[in-house]
Image 1 (cartoon, rainbow, N blue to C red):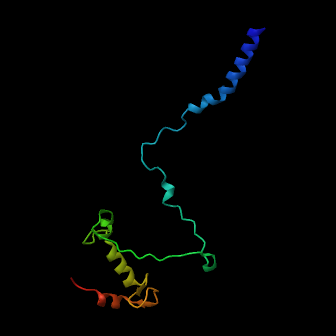
Image 2 (image 1 turned 180 degrees about the horizontal axis):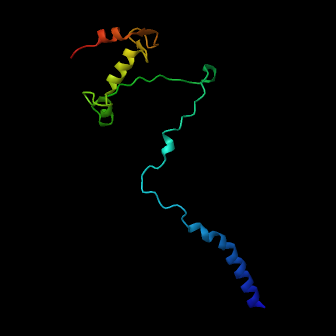
Image 3 (image 1 turned 180 degrees about the vertical axis):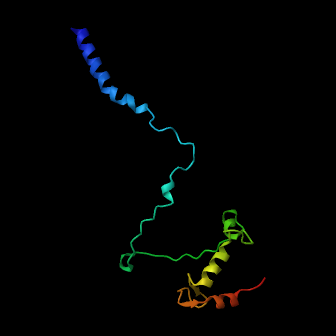
Length: 129
């Protein structure tokens, strides 16, 4: 009787694990590419809701200078001459100012961004060194 009980318990135990035996079967062969997610380029970011001034508890404006001599900032500085689609940061900014897609502001009076500048005024302020 004891042998029959052990045999039945063993059968129940093995029957419980029989469903997980198929877990090791690979239906798809492994992919030999690094990035196989082509849908990532087609995805659009989720638009973030606008933050109301009444909901803002605290804010701070931080002014930073980008040191182009640092290694991590070198992609902003190079290439010196534009080729193909590669341009440096200041060229991209100046082209955007020329076509009017961004607005530059004068900070010599205050740092409130109250006085907008056009492209001609910015070019006249540049210093040739």
